[in-house]
Length: 402
Image (cartoon, rainbow, N blue to C red; front, top):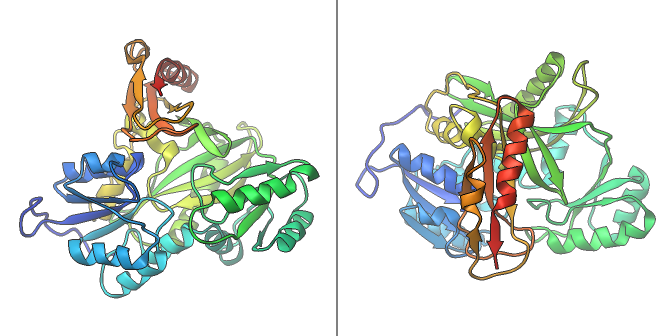
C-alpha cells in the first residue's frame, strides 16, 4: 500500500497538497467538495468547459484526456500530490509512465488501466482470480463479433470495451438486432478502440453495487446498494439491498479478492449480479468494478454517516475509515433531460421538496441532451420501499426546461 498520512498544507499556499481530478462530472464534483473540506487544493480537468466539478475547484483545465502529451503537460504544470481519475476516457498508458516516475495515481495506474477497459478487468476476474462471471467473448472485427455471438448465444449483451453510463450497450434478443448492436457499440464507445465484449445473458434477480474501501485501517464494506438500470444506465438506487447473510459474505469475499488484486487506497464500486431469492443463499456473478465512487452510490449522500465521496477522499489521504454507519434506508432517483439545450433551466423544485425527507442535487451541467443525467433526487424512509417511493416522487416533479 501507499505512504501514510502526511500533514496537510493550505490551499494556494506553499506546501499545499494538490489533488488533480481527471474527470469533473457530478461524481467528481462531490469528490472535489470533500477534498476542499479537508483542506486540499483541487484542480479539475475535463474535456469540456464548465463541467460540474470546475465550479468548486481552485483551478481547472480543459483538455482531451486521451491525449497523453496534454495530460502529461497538465501534471507537470500543476505538480499534484494526488492524481485522481474519475472517468474512463483517459490516456492510461501515460498514467502508468507518470506513476513509474514517482507521481501518485489513485488507486494505482495499473488499477486504472485495467478497469477503464472491460477486457482487462474481465480477464483479471475470470482468468486470474477465478471469479464467477457470465460467459464472454471479445471481438475487433465484424467476423469475430459474429463468431462471438454464435459462441455465447442469444440473448446476449454487447458493449464497447470502454464506455460509461450505458453508452454503446445493447441487449440482443433476436438475430435481426445483431448487426445494429455491433454498429452502436463501435460508434458510442469511449476511446480509440473498436473492440467490443459480447456477454452471455445472466438470469439474475437483482444487481448490486458493493462499495468497497481500501484504507490505512483495512478493507471496509458499505451496506449493499440495489439499483435499477434502463438502457444500460442507472435510474434508481437504494440502500440497503436485502441479501441472504451467506450471499453478503460471498459478495464481500469477491469484492475483496478483486480490489486486493488491483491494490492501492480508495473506494471501489464493485458491481455484482445476484441470482435467487433473498431468503436463501444466492449465486453471485462478478460484473464490473470502478476504482472510484459509483453513480449508484449517490444514495450514500443521505443514507450513510460518511458518503462514498468522503470515504474515497479519507482513504486516499491515508486517514482511517472506522465504522461505516447506515443512518436510515435511503434511495436515489435520477433527473433526466428529455431533449437538447445549451442553457437548461429547472422547474418544479418547490413541489419536489414537499416530499418528506427529500433533497435535490442539480449537477450544473452546461448542456443537456436526451436522457442526460442532470440531477438526482434523494430521500430517506422507514423502509427501503418508502425511501424509493419518495425519491421517485421527488424526481418526477423536477422538469428540465429546454
